[in-house]
Length: 284
Image (cartoon, rainbow, N blue to C red; front, side, top):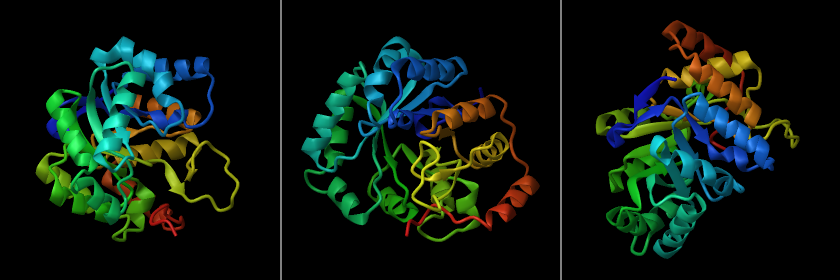
């Protein structure tokens, strides 16, 4: 599987990241183990996990312990204060059987209020900085669904990575709350590693019915997933996180193993098709 340098971290990450969100939904240990082994055997060397992803940390712990030297491990916290972030960081380290995280990220930092708390006195950023000095984390990142808030965050701290939605449906319906292009440009200027999420998001579910293990309506056909992921990976990103739906995640890994860049004409054709879709963001 192709690998790309993740910005200033200098790590060569596989073009898909194993998304721990796949464990948000109940999954038997045997089935979960088979999925993780398949991902690692396919060349995936980057894992993204969070304590809010069900029992993902517990299920991934034994794999992290066995493959620690071969993987880039990213974790996240939704805690906004220093004390809470410190506690969650140490709990995640214990659950994942590791002494350090390659990357520790602010999870879903979507609002100006949360951002102000994080960077303020006794905010979580202080916990991150101290943990870095202590050797518990190597790099600091931000994840968000809100490009406007990301740009504000970039003014307040020199982040190593950013994780945000990058997909063709959003690209076809740009507005400030979903336009990721300014982030990609700024990331390139500052050598910030870009991790894409929601690459296969078609939009919100049209009804309350959920047909997949995702909170949004995903593309589900193999051809749709292939073109969606190829579009995302043809943008200036390093890697794309796999879906929380295990079947879709397996297809994403397969596409990544056989990835070829999408030509501009093919991208334009895809964007024209997306004009009929309702984008996932901004959420109404």
